[in-house]
Length: 357
Image (cartoon, rainbow, N blue to C red; front, top):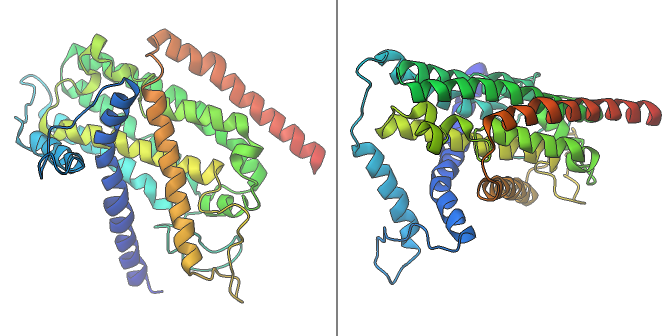
């Protein structure tokens, strides 16, 4: 393919994957989170925004999403009088754009096997750095929260921004170290290669069970979700780093958080649950070694989405099960327990690989 065709295909895949799937799932999650919490707490939850009347109760789902969208669109777009207006305006985008760019290297379906040249139809960019690119981009999202907090000129926002910076930087260390064992076992940092190496049920959750637990705990903290939602603790900070935000800017912060939830689910599905691999089903190949795309490919994409939904559900379940930590407990958990466990897992993995080689 020419450079122009590659760019065009990249744009098409970005629209289909990020705007057509990720943004849709993140928007639906704003409602599903409230419905799941209602189910766990034995109450009804949002059910009043009926479009077609009581004869069609499921229309309340679509009606509630539309109502939420209209509500944030027509709210007053408030700006702090004594704040930095320009930084206050761009901060939400600094949180949303990294969350969207992470999807450039996440494969939704089978690509060429390792060592075989071919086009990645289900991946926007086949970068050699692979998941390292995700870590680099994800680490930029901390600037959106901290800049927005500082630009708001509010004590509550500033405290939330300080908590955000300390929490995200602290848990990024464990998040990265939890995956080093995966890189060692499968011999690559590219997600497509890692997924291919997990055939015959050699999933990452089987070879690295402790790493999966550490990754999920650190990822929940990285996305600032309960029980690690200290940067936006309503009872303490009145919403934290986005206290002074309203209308669509508030919605952009919230949407970036939900996109992060979906991204965590996609990464966990790729690294620990075999990605698009279907257990005990071999991906058919053509004579030149490339994938023979067909109906099985549709099933592989579907199973990847199912794994993603399962991880999303798990994060929501944690969100409404555990009480919020104190801030000192949060930092102690990250540095005193999770980080040593991640290093221990890395050492054990290296020893086992040395003995079995």
